[in-house]
Length: 175
Image (cartoon, rainbow, N blue to C red):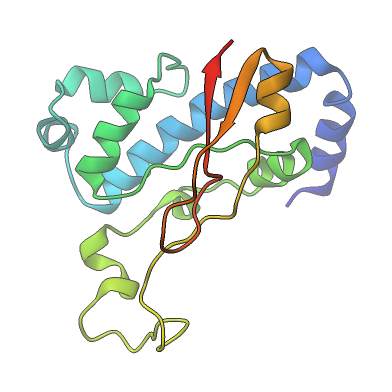
């Protein structure tokens, strides 16, 4: 990580418009870079990726340009399916974002497909975290009731389902 670049960006990020512009531009570039890195990692041509994703080669070419900005979740999902990867979209603090931007490389954008993922390989020596429980994902309970009520929605409690905990057992209605 280049300390001078980091300090310059820290100073630039103090301006809200500058940090938003930088984040927008970087997002577009990072998505384009990752698509290209994943395609090259698999030794696919743009045409082959296009066929796997149900798109035209010209669209893949456009999406691999750093200035492409017409992303949709639907398109990103199609690409994730083609690469046999999970798609994650998340929010990030600007401090973590800054460090991520300064450490971006093509190699750090590569990901193995499900069939090459060591966690799921038949001969994997990796063991589940617990051998006494099944592999069930449980999300933490999240209570959005205060936010919903503040935004004009009524909150009605819904009985919790039997089984492992999941997202908060609440429903809301426009009110």
